Length: 270
Ligand code: AMP
Image (tube, rainbow, N blue to C red; front, side, top):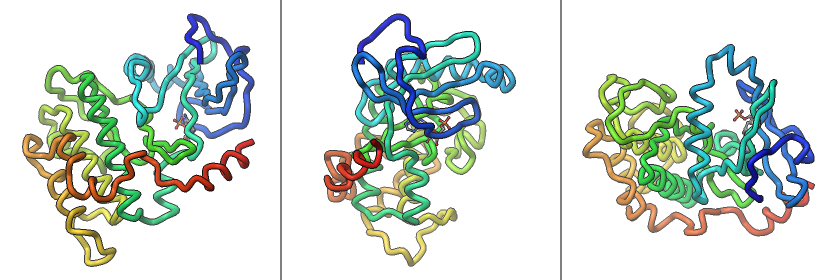
């Protein structure tokens, strides 16, 4: 899609309604000049004011528009008028990973390892740019048509030059240093990655390995090295990507979807 100073709704053909969040609605759309398919997130200003969400949205826009990684949802542009703010986002055709996980119950090791590797790669990219996401959870992870993971929703993200103190994120995924309101850094995202990996494979919430479902000893090894209370001893993202479980199971393309399923989804989408 071309870069432009001023965008407006008239630049887009609006397609199907995708869904609704706390602050607005999301639509499939096509940019008229290029024909490029995007998702438009329309956020209503009175709602922003009611929930005092301006600072989050501003931070989300500032952070997300600087990020360009295959596993981070692209924010192509944004514009506003009197009533609304509109984000022009990459379209993630397969929607929330959360729903896919709920429908499947659990993922096989190849799928889980592929998502964990994609997430670790995207977080390593963000951390290198000095960004900590702080709210990684299945609801904030979307899938594109090929089933590639995309991190979305940078409303809680922060620039990480110094240790931070704000308590944020979603309670089930909070790292111990955040729960104890201690200073925290990028290692909070690595804790969450351990929880997600556990959830992808096992689903129950108590932190112990049940006898079923059977999970490989390499997967258990990775989870145990991420769910470490002392954040300085937690495995770093580079080591996650080099871990034997990831090396053995993750798809390098980031997609576990078969070609015929992609073609079928394209036809359904039209
Ligand atoms: P949200 O306002 O972010 O909670 O999104 C509302 C609904 O739209 C949720 O079901 C999201 O999964 C979906 N959605 C948000 N952004 C996108 C996107 N870029 N592509 C596809 N679906 C999206």
